[in-house]
Length: 228
Image (tube, rainbow, N blue to C red; front, side, top):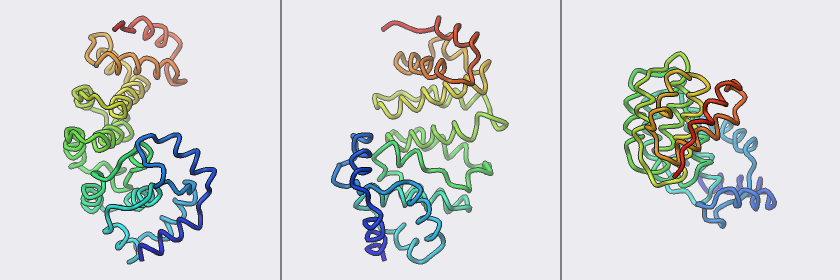
């Protein structure tokens, strides 16, 4: 059955798009990129949802291609049961090897913000695995900066120290978004130099590029840039 899915992905392949994708993802072996566009992958995931074929595919790790990993992530995204979503992610996250696959992961079960989710995100953020950490931070950003926000979540994100570019970029993205949504709570992390130098300055860069930050706020943020 997994061979059938691989054949369907191959039939959707666009060599030109594959070349474009390879340039965006230096961490992915280029020979594993087939070149299937995301709308087609999403359509395939919806058609497979809940089938025996999908179950067999989800059990068949590791996959051979970038698109198979993306399809796997999209199938997890269709999961509405919290426990099953966490279980599926625990199996899959160790195989995620790029920012794009990582960032498409968003189980529908998480949108209800189950009581256990913040603790689970904290465990993933503390895992030390690049894309598991990035995933946890991304969920913290997308789910817990609005009505479910708590100041402790800022501290959790700020506590991450990494040499990995894709982790540090997500921390900066998180804090830039926090400045747009929870400005008063997030600002002290810059004023008090509580972030690493690169993350600090990248946060400011992303914030001043955002249309959600006011001109007055942007002017002040620029004064907080740090020198190495």
